Length: 474
Image (tube, rainbow, N blue to C red):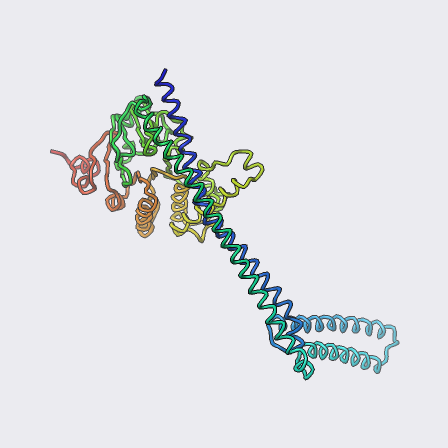
């Protein structure tokens, strides 16, 4: 009974620890976004103040004859309005004269007089507009001095308001940083206490009846997969270490994709264990989880064919992939709570960072339809980075790519491993790619292990050469 209680407590404390870590990460990730929003609002206020200053000075600058962009623009608008008004007046006069001409009551002197009168009115309006925006002796003597006084007064007031806004912004940012630091500190204390409890319970727990080395993230132990009378995977065992790029190779039909499908639970293995290190405190057997829960354990994958949501933009495709790490519940999303908006902004910020890392930012608002195949492959790879992966499974990532795209893919895979710390587990037929980027290579044939080791060792292994090239072994 005590062991059962220990196991239940272990599960409860693990879930609490995970929630606390996620809350702490949300606070830390939202802090720079919040600061950016505060500074953006302050910039908008300052722009509004500058616009008010220009509007307030416009009448004085016009009367004083001082040149300004706003005065010049206002003058042009005035001239355009006069031209438009008299254009339509001219059209109306022409129509009136035509009607009179048809009735035979139009004289030649009347036409000339009315056209002359209209042109005089237009010239008077234009002169009035020019006079309004031109400097004269009266302006020089009276308005210029008032303009400069008003300008100094308003600029001083604007400067004081800007300093006040800046001080208020810095106070808000400082307050937010202090509050975030306080909350993170409290959460760190809770996490430490929770980890101590977990370590104590782990020593008395029977939850894990298996062992795995500290530097190993995945251990495949005597895995078998049978389809009726066909043995696709035959007593296969190997280990994948943390942070390495692990390559699985073999001829067509060797069972490579079947192994991936077993790990991600698309297939249920006939026998064998698949032990995965979820985090520093938790080791799990993947056989105990359903296919839709594998991603929550930190394992993500791509497929041989591109599987994107074609009706959504590239950015939205990435946000959909982050659904497993959202912690806002149904009611938070229904009522659009503050927590939900914070999570949404954090996820968008993370998606944009991923797009930048993979040089996909120009495509963020583009729909995947019609994009080059190499770009689609990169989008699918970017999507795997949204779910906090511990291990990324790539099923033939270079399939269909040309030499330049394959070379670029090598750099991307190494960048992902180096920047995220995720383990890369890939199946690939391009031996140049495999030998260039993999730290460890496992070769299989007909579901059986041929060899495992460094790329140079695999290249010189006679069993591998026999399986690929048909060479006879001694």
